[in-house]
Length: 216
Ligand code: SF4
Image 1 (cartoon, rainbow, N blue to C red):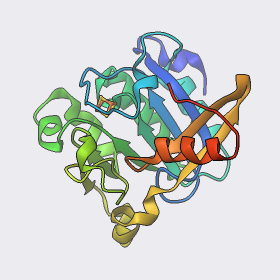
Image 2: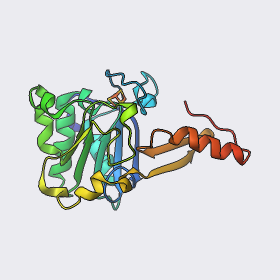
Image 3: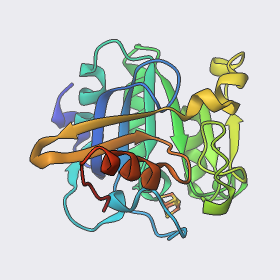
């Protein structure tokens, strides 16, 4: 896929991406954490993704090319930050290219917006490309450790039949695994949706073993 295909298209802001994540949906997935969110939910677990520095800018074609380079994935998960606050045309272009690739990749999207808000806005054009939409603002007190969602007010919409039959996975506790990786500069990265007290319990357990860490 060439960059020339994207002449005239807008760009996407990428805070982080990983091509072999196993905790943000069924199977192994490419995950894109988009940069930026205007919602400011108290207790947001994605503060790092909302900083106005340290992100990359990608064309829809180059982001699609990266996803397609990830081997053995069942699909792609869009998170953030707020995917629905990216340029709509660029996001539609990215998802159109993915679909046109013929790889038959599932698409899961986390958003702080409600489905009904999206349906009534120009962002509605993104929805036909999404199999699962997890919607609504994160509410820290409602983080019950269940389901592929941050808090119990959020809803898991099966917008296509692709993941029908996996309702138990999406709503159960097993969807709440996390991955922890040690990156360069001794930086710990946590993927997945941690329980409400995960960070403090994790830090406490490490401290009892003589390790001191902190989360930004
Ligand atoms: S919608 Fe998500 S990324 Fe945005 S502030 Fe709320 S929890 Fe954070």
